[in-house]
Image 1 (cartoon, one colour):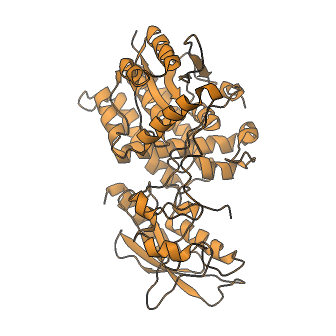
Image 2: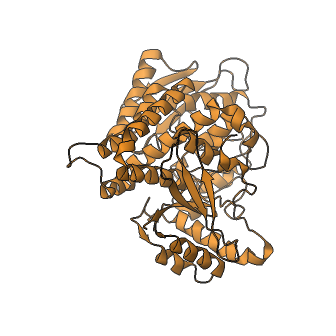
Image 3: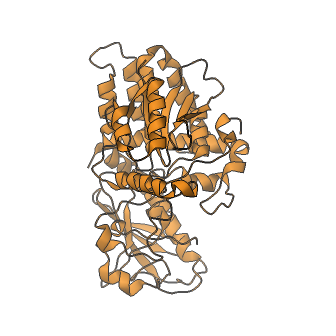
Length: 310
Length: 151
């Protein structure tokens, strides 16, 4: 695989919190064939931090199960996030370090298993609002993505249905009519709308699948199921990319950034560094030019958008 | 029902009416965009030779983002096939109706998957927890969090 992301030595821990079908009345109706499996996905790092990570994992898990949590929230100060980690000095140190580097705001996404896709889409469109001169090439990239899907035998009607809401937003960025032009507020309300938001995510999932299948030689060595067995690309995509709510792992992240020709930096807020240093994973794609990178914040099991204000 | 959802169902229905259902599947009724009924049988060698079952699809306004609720109809005329993943109340434990549902799947695709699930059955048995499940099962199978086996 060409993308830099694949060389990372250590896979992030995963909180398998969201691959659950919609459950209402969970208590009364969760009759299972093999027992409830909500706790086995909470990974831990080294023993010293075990309880702390367990707690943080629980927090994210609860967040993700909260049906009232917004799909995406307006930007808030990193001070707020810092306040949530007061019991975890290694995290606080990393948050301080991010704030010192100018990353003072965060756009939080719902922990519903779609957070990577939602965060990336929001960050991408948001950066296009700042650089409308890039709209034309961004559109061309999406259009060629749709063609790549067609080559992979996806139904053209289905592709266009899911592409439409994304294209409408991209088009609105470049609109000459100020009343139609996409502002950050309008972008946020589009992403808060269940239908628009989830259609965009579905499109990005299909695009990820198309990328993995079109360049399957690059990805074949990295496709594993939960038990660590190697999978064929088609089967992997059917199980781990296409379904809404399936979290994105390294492969999906790399494939989607490549398909959209994005330059992405992911800050790892993982409590790992003693001096509060934050490791950034940089994903570059051929053809991303010298565009400003999109910045995401990764906490074990979850992605949000980071905003640099100075 | 939202426009995207009904547009999608309209398209699927048009295709079914124009091109027909997959072999062994027949559309019984699709009078609205809330519930559709199909008959389903397994052609060729299988444990279900000569048996015809009735499938009910229920759609909510988030279809196809959210999966349809699919079950076998159990009433005075029809029963649920005896199968390790099919409960006697008609509920089906199949991952594509739950955490492996994808919006690119369709009603026809679900029918074909269920057909092959029945066709590959090696012994006619109910799920081990059938009685317990059926006693407490919700009306809508989508409210059940099934644990999917590999097969």
